[in-house]
Image (cartoon, rainbow, N blue to C red; front, side):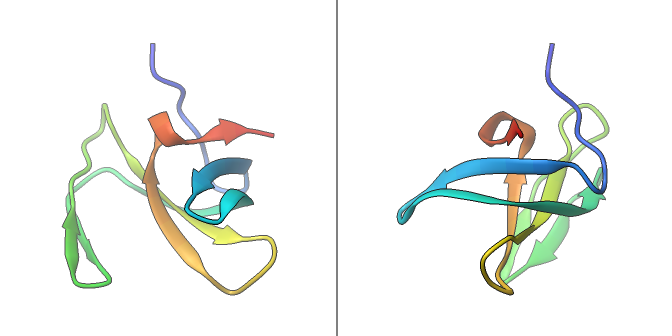
Length: 69
């Protein structure tokens, strides 16, 4: 079963720079455009926008890439 996250959850993920953590700010359940790319999302497999704890960077990831802190 896939883990579902909600707005306000504190999560971490791996990036080229190492482990990054942040707070989920949006949950997408339909395809959406972000930074020039179409990100695919469904009710069963949403994507999450996460604001980094250390910068103003916002990332979009599937739940499979995230770990709840």
